[in-house]
Length: 353
Image: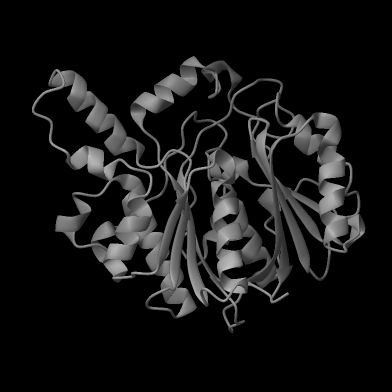
């Protein structure tokens, strides 16, 4: 089977990840219930007349995708695949508010047209004049993993040489209010959050956009080999270790051969038990976590994939991500394990390019 490479990685998040030296300034975010992404000056990337008509997630994705393509040295990809959990929530809310305010009459279609989940992939394609395969996955917290799996199949089947793959989710005021009512977001009295030893349910919510170029050829910019992906919708706690071990056996790897494992500890005591259970498998690996840097959201695994790519390329793990003190001199294999609220479990295996 041919190898698929991650040849570029760009990310907009609650950290200043567009900055080249962002790794020196990573800081834990555990005292605010809702984290906002650090957005760039969009005038540098998007004409102001266009920017005014774009929602936040479209603007973030346009910039992140442009940065990813520039790093990969590609003007136009063969395919564009985007994963999102909530899509263009801002325009959805605006449309529904108009429906209510105008008593379902005299509605303009603009907000409805721009509220569909595939708006992001469509806008990127329009900007690039890319007429190739264009697809959007809406699979909750495994949306990016499905997108990468599709891209890998496109490349291995000879349908594409370079695929732009991304993940994006934005916040909206009303949705955040609803999440607080359902206790999906933590209460004020549970702050600051101890992500690794939380005793309360709920999370700190974030947002962001991550884009990657996957290709069949290794380049001088290549970050990693995308070895394998495994996704399952539901999993009992006592099945977690077997789920991971079966994945490693399939890839001819022993537990101790993993140099680092990145877990999605979110501070939600009800669902973090999966990560605690899984971490017992890897006493000799560097155990890492990341949602204290990004917040929780449907496609937060884009941030962890971005960080894993940086770790493999730089051969250095940021101190703020470490759970244990195990240190490997040569970081060759990284396993990423993520879920959202105990659903949609995913495993992604990356190897140094």
